[in-house]
Image (tube, rainbow, N blue to C red; front, top):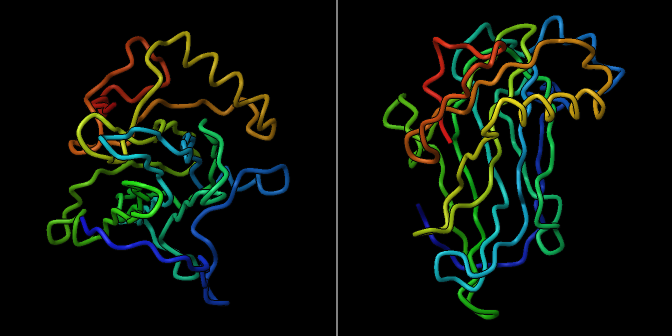
Length: 227
């Protein structure tokens, strides 16, 4: 990972006019795409973490996933690019995402963490594909979603135990997961009664192994789950 000095700049994402976004937030208007796309559910905490790993504070600001495998749509961007809604004023809580994405396998391909040693010494820990791939093999982690599937892939925040790194946490109990799914159905009524699968972002670097027991909607063959 690279550490650089902090300079104030505008964050602008440029998407060519001929290329569609790789993902869309689920709405009533696009819910019909559940028949052809996959839907991923995740939570991200973009809030500032005070006293993180000996720092004054740290804040996860960007995460990027790139699509690696599956039938490709040439008119669609292959990247899922998530970023903090604000660099300064963000609540320290999880933000929910329900994203329609092209079916396939996605790998973590980048992240950006703002790190402040003091009010005057601020930098960034930045990882890109050079840090998160060994050749064509992803080392940061992957998730998969098939056509018509709805998959919960985890809760993402910072881990501050040794150094500031992104970490994939998870819902631990079946009853808690059932409550989460019920809440998601209320928040996104267009989801209807589509089954929600528990299939975590799989990683050896940014999470721990975990399998949710007795989850009838989990893929037991793929339950080398991660925290």
